[in-house]
Image (cartoon, rainbow, N blue to C red; front, top):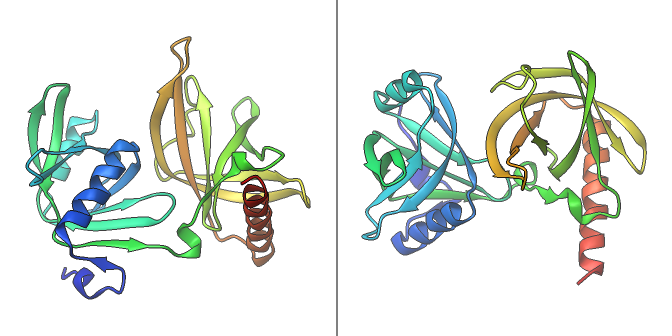
Length: 240
């Protein structure tokens, strides 16, 4: 496979700018999708860029089988899940030991893409006067989760404690709904595109951040999401 990233209108080539962006992703603990040509996927994050600015270190999987598959891949794509989309490629990953454990490493890319499109732009759902909630069917009925960010392409939620078994990478959840204050309950199909641990509560409970993609949303649903995002942005501006 030949990548045409260098010719992309979103491509950045300045080394200092690239290192700055990657370092910022590390400081923000931004979730990164790692995908291979062989269909292996991993949600990870940048641990750091080394002091010489030559290599990037990212978190590995807890599954050694996945780590081995990723290590043997020759074409890998990295992309952020939310906000302005950052994307780059690598041809090989090494495994090395850091102070806190093992990590993947790869050379700082010579080119990255910084894409700001409507479908990638997510807004903090907590900025509004009313929290959005998503209802998700589980074995015991429904679970209700607060939405922390939203875009035309999907939503993010946070869940405390253990996750229901249905929460697996790539799973499509049927029968979900979102309660919008402007229009009421809207049915949606959600695909899990990312699961990562964001923090812990004072009681030691793990807080999981789940990223969802809308699956074949209707035009009316997209319009409702867009109108809600506009309202949130207006509220944010009015608070400045």
